[in-house]
Image 1 (tube, rainbow, N blue to C red):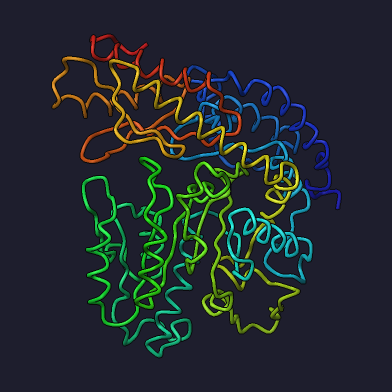
Image 2: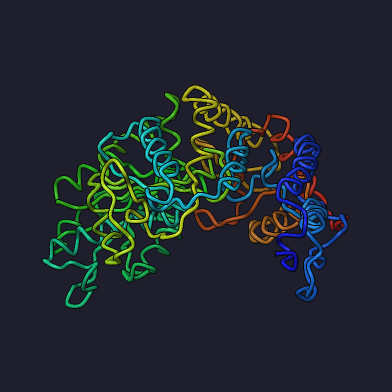
Length: 481
């Protein structure tokens, strides 16, 4: 054993002590830290070089990773990351994730880890309770909302093929027509990607948009659905990334019931609107959907990666993903669940543990209060935009995303798109806050999302100040600092 470096170098506990030592000052500095340290050293180039022949030992390697990582990471777990829709990690969830790595459970098989399987069963039950979903729904944790959408749509695909008399798990698409998929204009690229992976085709979604915002034309969709020969899949968006807008889920559920269609809801972050009486009306009808997908690393504020999906008929998950046919992979049962038969992953980490920790730590009340605080902050941001002479609110702030643009008086309309695209790029380069641009109703806009548990009104005010300051500098011809 003495020639094996894994036996002669420092033990794991020493390396963990080093991470723990550096964690406290890092976390303490997050509230005031730039999202990106633009002038920091070292650089990402320091990660490179040749593969070492002889290792330098655990402590040296971890110390070097911390040196580079703390200086070059995007500090998206802090309160001023408004780009995309990225939550932070609550203290309980972060510590739970450390426990996950410490125990390193194989989370796919009950036999491999009764702990991981039981924890997943518990958190799925807690999440259904949190969102007001029926207790009889099946579910599984996934790496992301993309994989959660894929899982729900794989169950829909099996259901659809079965109605054509085909076991698609066993024989594939041979002899089947294209699966009809209907949506509003709010359908997210992750849903299209899921359909692409499933072989249904990314561009086969039939979009029914009433206008340039993507708002659903319900009558047009109903007309198309009535003309479809055989079963169809309806898509609903619970929280559009540009504005937080929702499709009318209850109306779509009515259509699904009337025509025998499958209703899949992409609730990546918007599903959390169900937590508060202020916003719960947006999710009305969610309990009637056949499948519902969401992310945990967004508004739940658990570490990457984490998603989850719920399916009305639990058996459809095992029909879409089970039947391994391998002698050493014995099938579980309802009391000893093998979650690798309910989703696309075979090898799975025990991602239930951070969810369990944060739900146990803060409960329903804590997570509801976080959602309501973010709703208030979004309204505050919208009020700041409305009150500024050089900003324009482009859509109501009904959830946690605020869509607006920089529009200084007197600037020709044909210059606004380029201005706002450049503004977003320069705000990210500045590093004090992060936000991105998008195209909404034909114009380039900014769409900060507020989902981090650390974010305060002061962070939102700083965002507004930096946008206006950067916009003024660009329009006056000033150089980037």
